[in-house]
Image 1: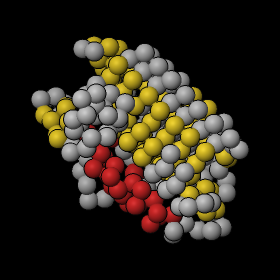
Image 2: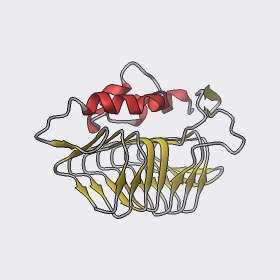
Image 3: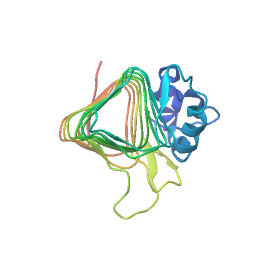
Image 4: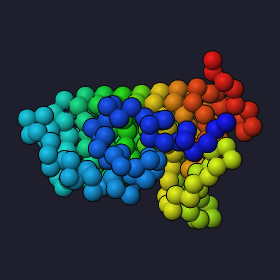
Length: 224
């Protein structure tokens, strides 16, 4: 039976696949690091080798091998890791780590996020107060909703268990290899286990177990 143990860092992520692995030490759940991302970026950025990373503006570090389109806007604190691609009109509002080989696409907006290596948010995505695991992919137009309509604090629910996060702003935690279909909305506090798929145009809330296919509310199939 699903429970909070399925929403832990170890259950969702491969920490070797992010430059930000240290931020997850000594915490159990990934959302615990959301308030720490900005400060962590500044500390880490100041240690990055100058032969591999350029510092541009205030607290923005961009790998020399990254490709950044001239129309992209990157506000600090931010780290764009090696071989990442920041495409036309991408808007990085700050407190963002973009992993190795990741793609931030046309008109995509990031705010207070960690994208692990090889993540793709390539077309018209909004990703805020969220963590996306290794090779996670969000289809065109899919977004994270990071504030509840009644502005109350976000609670994570998994099976019969729940965890009060104490956070007003909390988007989604996507495990490694998660695929989110086009034009889907991930509601505040959504957690999706490794290698799960979400059908296009879905409205997702709560916890989706690993190796699952989310078809619609109340209909989740096992992949294997």
